[in-house]
Every structure is written in structure tokens, then in C-alpha cells.
Image (tube, rainbow, N blue to C red):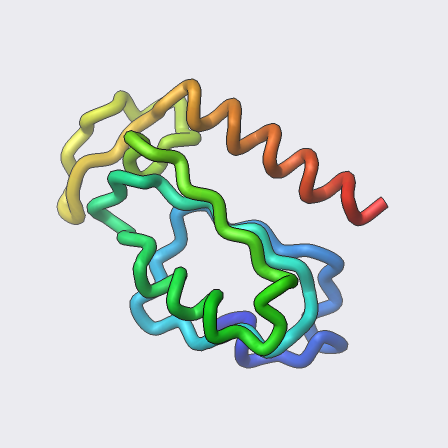
Length: 114
């Protein structure tokens, strides 16, 4: 199930954040709950195009924000995965600069709810 499967009342969330989501079958979001989606610009595991299309077609496109970290791979926020690690879906790994920038973006997004 995805966000598109629920009403705002059912979700019970004030905000939603997704890091490097797999969006192959994602449908446009129909709720006004603010969504922050953080993409790795060089993500081979979860390319961002399907998510970008979903965000553009959302009922409330202003409530969805997408940020792309260029030269970052999938799992760029996971210190335990060395950059350039090859998995079955492609390259992944930690990128300190992107991880720090993403954390700052998450803090701004959550603080906006206060």
C-alpha cells in the first residue's frame, strides 16, 4: 500500500519523508499531507523519474517537495555502506556531503510543522 491508498484522516501523519524511494508502481498522492522526497542523483537502484512523475501529477503538487543530491548513490545516508558498493540493483553507498545536506533539509521540513 502507498500514500495514495489512504485518506488524510486514515494516515494520521502531519508530514512524510522518503529517502531514495522505489517508485516503480507509485501513484500520484491525493492527500494534502506535506511530503519530502530525497533522491540520490546517481541512483541506479531507485531512479527518481517515476517518483518525479508521481509528484508532478499529485492532487496537491505544492505539498510535495523533491530534492536531488547530485553525485550521490542509493543509500547515501547510510554510513555503514561504503560508497561504490555493488548490490544486485546497482551501486550504492554513503556520501557524507549529501547525507549532511539531507539531514539539514529534513530538519527544516519538520520544523516548518511547528
